[in-house]
Length: 354
Image (cartoon, rainbow, N blue to C red; front, side, top):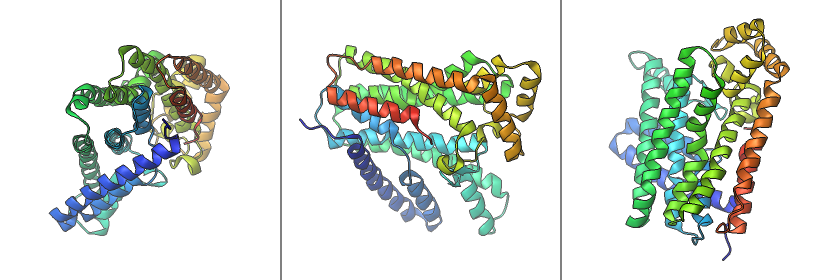
């Protein structure tokens, strides 16, 4: 059996998302013409960019169990991207981020629509309310896409509990992330837990197990996929943390140092705090959450983080977690070609620039 490669899987997922999203957009437009901007914005948001990590990992989890390629399963796996869309939209609201993928974040886009249309009330409140609703709609669409995918009742019974756990863990991790900022202090253990739940589990481990469950994978293989996905998911989030501070805005689509301005209490910041003296910690504390920081001030904080050795420590931790994940791919039930694809995805997740 010839298995599809990563690029082929990604293209097929894009096609499924395109078909589903355009159908939903048409339904919105049919309700009221005022929903046209909503339909267009959500369609663009879903279809414009995105690495499709979650649905790709889910489909590879299905193939890892020795299942044959299936359009119905691919469609169900594609629904995980809509959970991610919900998370991104709400994340930008919670973080007060103005941009996403080099374009205005959805709440800023609809804030602008309010102003351009001379609506009554606060443009900012309108934009925030609209974005919250759009995120909720994307989450509802994820359910709908699975229910309309054509997978069997047995497959639904096997996989839906994992889907529900994934979404609950995502929300729990997001709350812990918000709470960490409210606590106003950095803690390495807490930050690593947030990295695992906010992104790690829902980005890789749960999608893998969702796809494997659709194939009826053995408990042994499911455990092996978890042993691969959990450390890789944490490494994935740690890379995100580094990019949030040091990423090139031309590549990431967000201003360099955005996590500093947003006051993110990440593993990188916790490592810096542990390695720094009181004066450096005080400088970093003052900078965290200051949305007015200019490029020179951000560069100063970046230098302090790098000089502390925290950046190097974080990079070393990513490599250790990656090595741990790759060692879990040595499982007798795992197809060698799927293992190669999982290794390719692992490298993409941890070596990425955006």
